[in-house]
Amino acid sequence: MVKKLSSSLSRGPLANFKVIEIGSFIAGPFCGQLLADLGAEVIKIEPPKSGDTMRTWGSSRTPKGDSLWWPVIGRNKKSMTLDLRSKKGQEILKKLVAESDVLLENFRPGTLNEWNLSVESLSELNKNLIIAQVSGYGQTGPYSRKPGFGSVAESISGLRDLTGYPDLPPTRVGISIGDSLAGLFATVGVLASLVAREKELGCGQIVDVAITESILAVMESIIPEYTANGAVRERSGPILPKLAPSNIYPTIDGNYVLIAANADKLFKKLARAIQKPELIEDIRYSTHLSRGENQAELDKVIENWTITKSTTEILNLMTQEGIPAGPVNDVSDVVADPHFLEREAIVQVPHEELGHITMQGAFPKLSKTPATIRWAGVKLGEHTDIILRERLGYTHAAIKSLRDDKII
Image: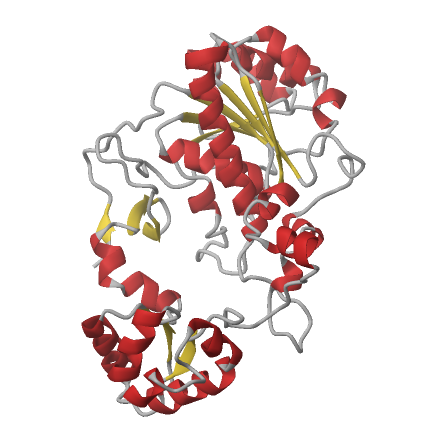
């Protein structure tokens, strides 16, 4: 059973830090989500009326037609509307920045300058300010001013070329992995800058995150493989080329299991488990290198065994023998998985329309100051008035004037 949020929530390790998030889509706001999960007060600045694009994204929606993506990426954040193209809106942002720890933005480089909000001027307002800038190609370089989406970054950085089957065109991973990686690296940069501010610098700094470079960072050894040996890694479908056995295999009940026994000791265990001990001494499979050379043949031998067994039978046997294996789960399997439920990797969060909404939990797990989900994404501008009143000292009349002028 999916657990509901506990009423006694940790404040989180970033509880004393204030973050201003401007921008939209995924790469920047995912960083904001992670910082908010860790306890930071994240004020999300959104355009009046329209709000963040993520409020309308996704093919699956609530009965009222609202996005089911927004409750996740907007969780734990306060929403404030502000027209940053207006002079009054810019002045309000500057007041917020002057008392904040972090400004997070993911506009195309140069946009802040056009709005009289250059990083230089903002840093002068607050020498302790950390400014995290997420963009397709980074703040410098010949591509910096080009429009950049995560999908394009995945393509230009080589990830799409490695995704899919060798005899078919490149494909998508299945999620917006480039954007999410950029959000993760932005989070790392912000956290590192907070430590550096405290321990060494005594002031803030700029965190420049490119989606392209975030993808390059996780591309394993493909660059030295090419530069040292001229080897160009290619699409390989579900297998690890020359590392066998490590593949998905069909079962008698129409599912798939992934078995990863691509080490000598593990392979010997697998050979005995599938009652093929002769494979251990077979010259085609007896060493790591020979198994890699005869990968397709070996996979067929294993498949001929798995197709006669149920998923449960196979997984129970693999666990018993100490062989890494798992089901190929779809989302219905994931939300019902007892391990995820026990660890609160899947949780229920209160939701105004649905009562509760189920989503992934807050990670990583910290023993003393855990990350938490305090609320799902809120209505557009829900905190505008209270922020203006309590943080900036605006009167009711001043707030009404801003609303009448469509600044908020």
